[in-house]
Length: 266
Image 1 (tube, rainbow, N blue to C red):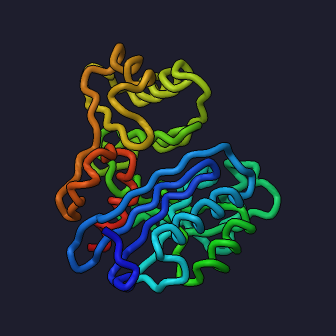
Image 2: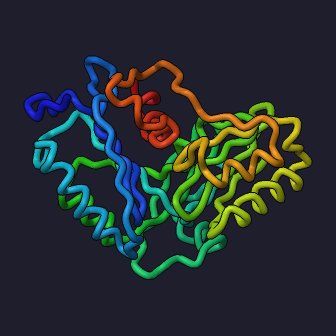
């Protein structure tokens, strides 16, 4: 249970998209996740509706205006690209992104290392969203969710968002493939998945495919994937961070990325 008087003992991680968030509270001394809240709504172009919902969440939990040990915002969007570390030039960040994306107006560009890949992850988000995050939570650190996703990939990994998914393929410690795909139907999803495996000369009958994100055993997408992929797996906790037993009703894959953030810090 959250105790606002102990806020300095809390690491808070928020996985933030334009249509929802995952809010996770980790008690540092107990090394335990003590609270999880998942919120989904209609997509907003600048994140204002999400920030309003987040502020209400902080108020409800008695945490608004409180200091924390750490506060991390993980941005979940499609505007990111990887640059090999030896080729990275900070002054060229926007050029890297514009090579792969048409950036909306008034987007701010950030970058952060992905040490396991010896690469830099360059990403962008709404300047208004970035400004609003720092105006309400000045201490907040902004990261991109794909950075955490890529630090745990072996074989084929898929992280499912509400309207798109990240997919990465790693073999023998080498990143062979990473991309983000939008989808409207389960048929879109399976098309991109199987096309990627085929291009990487992999078979859904031979390698395990790991799923995280907004997907469950009952998902129509997963039912369709089972026709073509023999070894479907869900990510499991690695034990480096505990989860309060009262939260066991929330599927682990829903908050895997925030968990990964906390396990990297613990």
